[in-house]
Length: 388
Image (cartoon, rainbow, N blue to C red; front, side, top):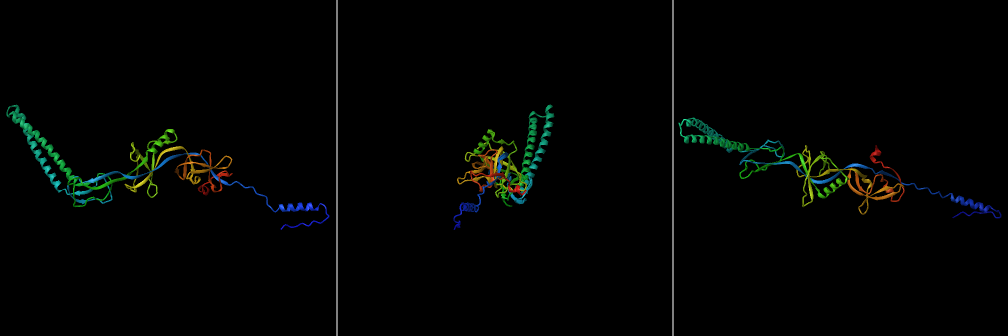
């Protein structure tokens, strides 16, 4: 309740003075309004940088070489020499097939060669004697012709016997089955005592070369055409031959320690899928990569010398799913700018549309601003830099 002022009657001029004093006293109880300061935001000024254009493509691991170890002669398998699942060297003994019948065939061929050689020597000597005698008419021309023919036949018999001996030697050698390549061998597909190679070359085991190893993957022909158009327009710079690097992302999300290199790209498109096949080569010294394993290849296909990037923390997505950033205009007002986002590189989005060099993008203090508000921009410091 306001306090009532008692003014003495008959005193001229005192009432207006007291009233003015009361009014001034009442105004002193209300503090003057304070001016609102603009919120401070951390911004980064857009510049260009040179970035590799990478693409993640799925594929599978394949061995460089695969050899099926087969029985090349028919016989009883006597022994398995190797340890299943181990690494074997080229020429290492794997299986032994009963050599007894092939040893006998070899000995027989060896004897046949000795007999043919003896007959050949006799025929050659007779031909030489008849050559002298026919000149003095001591033998008939017919006998001489028969001797010469017999000598030629003897030489042919020796050659045939040598070929038979060589065949017998090969068959005897095939009784010892060796590794055709170096690599890791799988389980034995037959056991001791089995009859192998009777009607066909029985498969005994499989060897796969695992170091180095292939990674086969595919890319859509649409992406290939898009990349070529960007090369032609000068938007992207092509990598020099042999510089295309491939990084392997494993099934558990880890990155394979050894980088690979792109070997080739197929020259045809699969008509059923519209994909182009590519192949990369990776070192595999620890045999971590196994044939059939699924992985993803991060392929560097080109270089964008004028790439515009923004930290992922500065890009927001609206209810419609479209990305945008908050930009500080030259008069320090906030403007929402829709952008086109490309691939992600080291925690940053590559911006393919909506921003230009010199734009100031808000990275810190986004929760304090809205479009049209005046702000105080300061250079953005990441938590890592601030800690240092």
